[in-house]
Length: 90
Image (cartoon, rainbow, N blue to C red):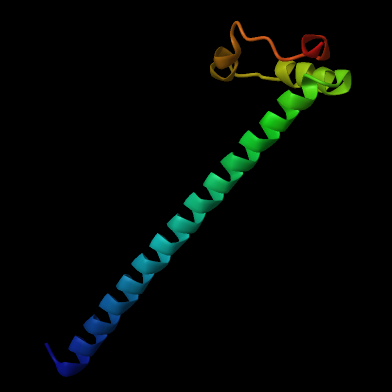
């Protein structure tokens, strides 16, 4: 292998390593964003459940959202569960 070919191969390895580092950084950033998104959804869900237990408007919104659940797998966790309603708070 000539010195020029060796330099080319070394540069290719460096590019491949940099690409791998970039992909790892992007994967970590995506994982952090998914975690933050999940946390936001959990917090908003908790707030909605709390509000539905205190205010008939939110209870109505929650009932409408529950009716919009389309996939059977998404409906399954709610089987036998009743959302809170303002009358439960009394």
